[in-house]
Image (cartoon, rainbow, N blue to C red):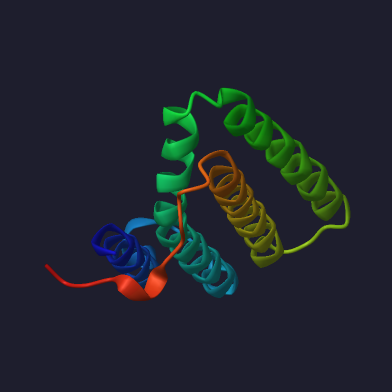
Length: 129
């Protein structure tokens, strides 16, 4: 939870301070900020998925982790190619990347729950230590 909040805070800070560090034209400022915030949110969301990828690595199911990464990267490349061919905006490209990243996390979670049957997903049992 903490690292995810840190990723969100960092993306908010980067989006706010963007003009101070980068020479971004005024008309491109909002799309760049939107893309930064979206990628920051996806980065925060991917941290919980990393635990499920670690379960698969611990079970030595590299075929599932590598195969999933390969398929998701190909899907991402094909969709980005078509989006660029259609001259889509930066926000659309950010949504494509974010969606494929979340897809990868969900697929790895599915595989981890199948490979290690005792593994359960319980979101409501979180307690502050």
